Image (cartoon, rainbow, N blue to C red; front, side, top):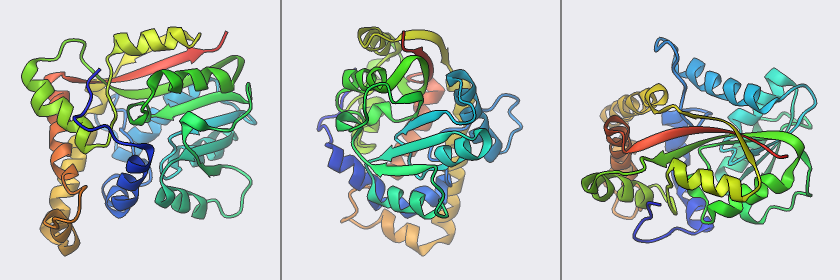
Length: 281
């Protein structure tokens, strides 16, 4: 498990997304997660939707399915699942800014619905969901075993979860740990980033079955080239971005450098991108 020199709290994670709210939406759009490139010719929007569709299909989401979107961000995935599959989606986030944006897009519809809630202390009843979707949320969790335990608790027996997560190579080189992985965790407000082997052990400890595992790093890393180009364009044309980059009071300005670290970590293989399809017996 790669950990930062100082572990963030849930409040710190929420504040990170609140302070970078406008920048995340500028650079990422409504989906604050990777895209999945199969042919390599997809637009960023198509790639993001492909990633969501794969998760939805693997989790068995259908019309009327009660779905929990853990770490829902700006609600893009929740809206997509509601619109395209007719699912009844509840999204949870720890960011007030993300919550307000997500709720503003609902137009008064019953679903999706959004909650400001820490997954570690969620109040959902046992066996209350037909499926769980969680895209790139695990690394923000301070207690990763508890993360999987809660998925097992809220899933109905026989139902499935689809999880995408950042993870580290099982044996990264020393310079990759020092120059890439540890700084990524610290700057990205990640309490820790585990390996496939570590996550597998946690999943099994939670009593969940692994139906499928794929390492998709080569199919998602194009995301970071696109984000880097968008950021470079903003720095060349927007005074707001230049001011934020040189504002010493902006503790999250270093995330511009983090973006380049992540891009490099994918290129060297130090970082991986895992898809886990899980079933509750």
